[in-house]
Image (cartoon, rainbow, N blue to C red; front, side, top):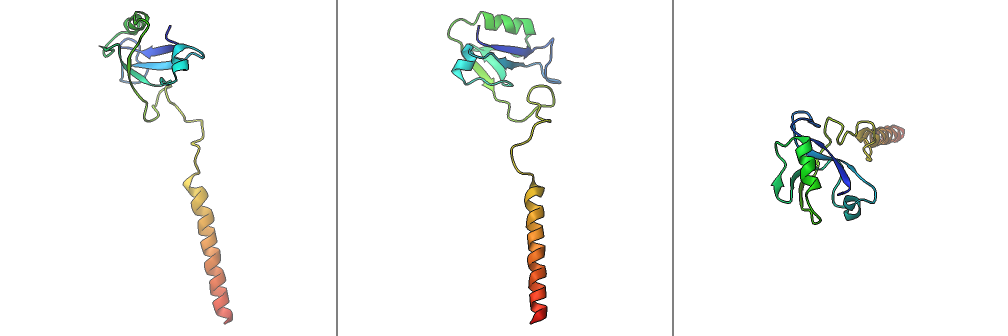
Length: 124
């Protein structure tokens, strides 16, 4: 096989109001994993030049099974998280600092500096 699983199709929409075919899982040490370009959540638009639009799931699976040894995929990267299972990141951290983590200490330092400056001026 090609080393990945797919979901979606006109009869099994994986993403609400979208019957596209998506990569649901990359199998470890499979062809797709070893190649490294395909990612879970990618939308597959075409296989060997054959458009996957408006296909039932089983018809898409059949296209992949009969794709041959040299397979060309046209994909669309998932640019932003989806609301459904693909790309859902709601329980994970974003990896960056929240804006409040920067603003609150900065504001506190500014207030302290102004307070010290005003107290210093009163003593003069």
